[in-house]
Amino acid sequence: MGVKMRIAISTDQDFVSSCFGCCPACTIIDIEAGDIRRTLSVPNPGWQHRQWADFLERNSVKCLIVGNIGANAMAVLKWRGIPIISGVQGSIDAVVRKYVDGTLTASGGACDGEARTCLKPDGTPPEAM
Image (cartoon, helix red, strand yellow):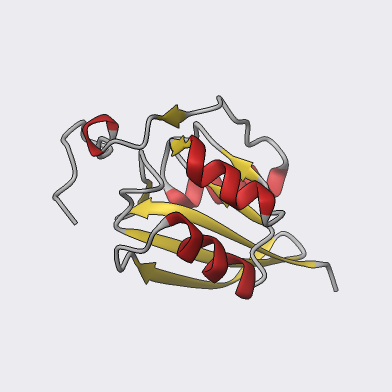
C-alpha cells in the first residue's frame, strides 16, 4: 500500500482556475499508490486567504496547485507550510496525472490580487463574488 497524499487544485469546472482568489471551487484529491482514491469539490464561499489556508491545513492538504496566486495568499499558505505549484494550466485529470507522474512543473504564475487580472480558462473575466 502506497503513501496517501492529499492535494488541492483551484478549479473552474474541469480546469485549473486561472486565479486562486477568484476560483469558483477548490478540488481536494486523495492519491494513494499513484491512484486517485477520492475527489471532493468545495465551492468557494468567498473566503479570504486566511480562511482558505485554515481549511486546507485542517484537511491535511500537502500541496496546492493553482493557475495564478497573489502575493498575500502565497505568503499565508507558505507560512502554514502548504507548498504551492503555480502557473499551472489544463484539465484537472491531466494535471493530476502529471502530478502523480512527477512531471508537473510550475511556471510561477502570480497576480496582483485584483479581480481584473483573473481570467477564466476561456479568457473571460469571472463573475463578481
